[in-house]
Length: 584
Image 1 (cartoon, one colour):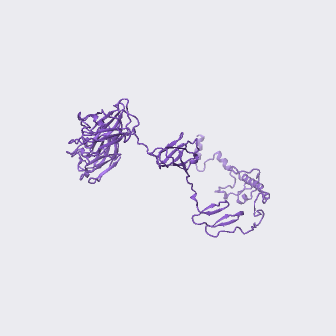
Image 2 (cartoon, rainbow, N blue to C red; image 1 turned 135 degrees about the vertical axis):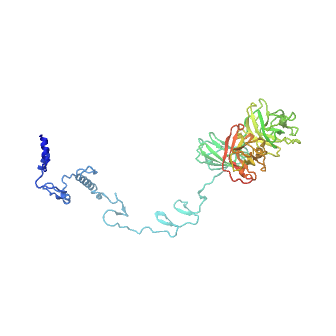
Image 3 (tube, rainbow, N blue to C red; image 1 turned 45 degrees about the vertical axis):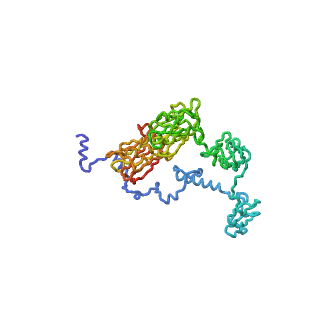
């Protein structure tokens, strides 16, 4: 058998397990009588390694304590070194404070109270009885009199104010004088020319010279005007007073006014910035905008007459250099789009003769017509107003009526035209003439065609509309009477789109039976119009056929393309003959 086999066979018997050499050595190191203990309570204290009892800790001496270093204690310090730092700081503080009280000297570096020193022990003795209260009545005041004596100032009377007396030695009650306000001094200017000076700031200037006068505002570089300076001015005589800005001065006139003052006009000139002044008040009104430059050709384009027929008649056209002034010298000639016959040529509108039925220009048919005048090469004229005079009514010919809708334009070459004024009037008028003011700032805007595009009605079998009004900024229905220019998506029998523009609610445009949304109705105004609003009117008994959701659209290409102008939805509950206005 091998050694391993012998060992294994032996140790298979009870109580025959062998110890390793290491285990044998460990057993040999156990002291005789040693036992297994669960805690230190079973261990007896030795002679050298003692237990840390509470009493022993409190009685342990601080062997090795150093008092050489103070400073802040940190987590790295031991208990012994921490106690040393604390003691060092205490000792240094005692040294620094020690003897300080001995250096205090009463009346030198510490104050006294009524001559008594604050140093020493015990209470301070206070002599005297204090200040007596002189007040006797509610509202009294305590004031200082001569020598600083406290005296009573009795309450004043109602509405009095407290002020310094005229001697400047005390206070007193007195009635208010002017509330502390200052008033503009009145300065009378009798000459015809004045330049403001710094002493005029806040003044009220009255110009009394009856001749034309001027008042000049000098620049900041000449006069050191304070911020917010005001000067009040009155023209106190006939003649004019012109407010004249000095070099670099901006002088802003009132809205609609000028810098010229007439008799009894008053203004305030307010400095709002360096070299910028606003004029507040009444001045001579500014002239309305007008045509400023001369032009050779002038044209009147007619869109509608009083009776809305296809022909128009004009007895005379006056082209004026100034509003209300005389007619410029035009005595013959003239060109028109067409004339009804040789008896009524365009020249009749410019001959300066009494406008009679036999002395007028009459169109040859068609709603859109024009007539124009040529001043000739080298003879261009400034025209600020155009007056169109009606002809006498030609017996039995109601078509010859005065134009109510027309546009005035100018040109320098006879081909390219610039609109400068227009006239829109209601049909059926009886005026004998009309006048259009002309201006370079005239805005020929808006659309010449308008369409009401209806996407939904109020549940009826078809759509019906008694009237559609297109209202411009002058509150004029520019579509009135132009039903002949109207078109629609469909109509029922003779209830065509013209009925929406005939001025009565007893008729209506009605779409064809069985027609479905969308529906639309359109109108050609011939001339462009900028609308302020539009209105729809319901016909009696057709409320469920009124538009509910719709869009007003505009076009300037004859209806080839449309632009949305105003969208409206949810218009329900129409009453009989109800009119609703929609602002654009």
